[in-house]
Length: 370
Image (tube, rainbow, N blue to C red; front, side):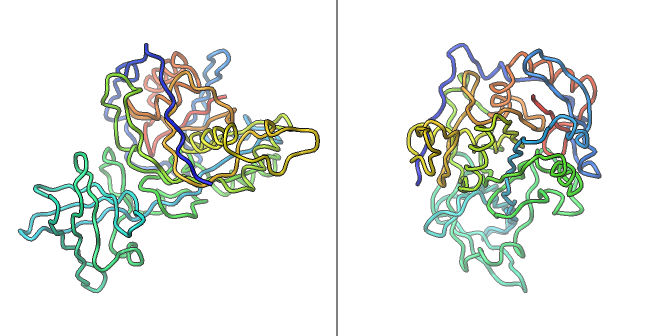
């Protein structure tokens, strides 16, 4: 079953500038913390605005038996390619998404890269690969074809991409993957998941916390600030999403039992809230417990693309607790966490994190929102 959920409208009083803040450059984390679970964790209580300061390894103190921890098992592809134009000029091709006809949507950095232009890339064993600009989109967005096709040799041709605000080379590319990553397709990591270690997951299992997985391939919007004055005018790009039946069943059973759904990262929030919208209007009730109508379902199993855009005013149906990193100013992710926790709470939490020198963004520290 596939559909395209509509955008969530924003209250007219919201302005994009309301989600701006000043961040000292030295607080942008350039390298990951080792071990993974030693990152700091600001704990925010939505009900009373209380803030405390812990570490990721303290997470078991805030979860309880019966909670369902939902993780995004997407895997980052080696999406960064470097080539040359016919004139010798350097070009960077940043793959975003493979399209149905075998071409790729990509960000292409270089001058005069119009339709029909060719980029020459050196493959394994000096294999010649030609990338052709098939269509020109907004800004650096291009549709690109490759001859020969690069799908099977991408690990040998491309590099794992890091966000543009990270300038320190990564010694181990696996450090930008979660330990549970399985399904390739993202161009950026679901960063809240980077904090987990096998030992922490075992400890949570022993506590009685259960695990479930969704797959949402992180795409273009990770790198796009909201530029419109009214955030409701921002257009979200669609991202591929899969909610397997076993995950939908686990979420629905957890809710029926009165226990909590804990989302690890904003990608999981968007996945679950998309599936909640599907359950409201499109999903069959299968299987339906005796005596309960279809309304018992919190989410539905679903595969398709989502452009769900969550702004303050959104009614959350599927998420009770959120573990998330600190997000860029004017970003859709900052708007999402403001919707979940309340903007005043997030403003205070971010000010506190800056004052206490938390590390921000992809390799930074985390916030647990209860």
